[in-house]
Length: 150
Image 1 (cartoon, rainbow, N blue to C red):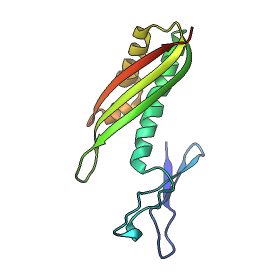
Image 2 (image 1 turned 90 degrees about the vertical axis):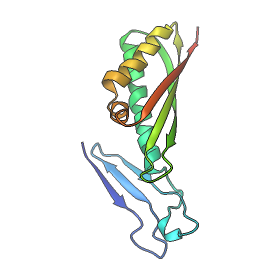
Image 3 (image 1 turned 180 degrees about the horizontal axis):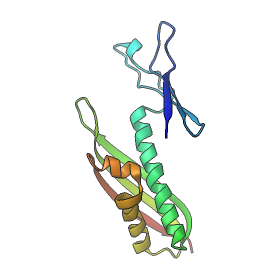
């Protein structure tokens, strides 16, 4: 797996802190920093997500993918799945994540709560590379709401 990340603001008086990431699978996405009122040349322009937001989003995508796949393989009728990630960060540099809570919302017909609980656990214990990697240094908690669409 590879990714090439390039600074987009190498020219101009206000160079900014925008970055273009080009993935090995052929996709591109932008990242940017927060504006810095005290030192505008050091801040971003708020044109795209922050890199740490991308890390959080990628982790959410990884675990939600697992949960849907595990439920579908169990022949459950999943109609939707979302996960809201809420993270706290350290106050001092490096401002690493210290706690991430993942609140899943799963809807479908007749899905047992135990199946959702098992799918989330399997994702976090065996399959989701991102959350397993982060879990080595971050306290990760989960919860879920199950909506029966019968």
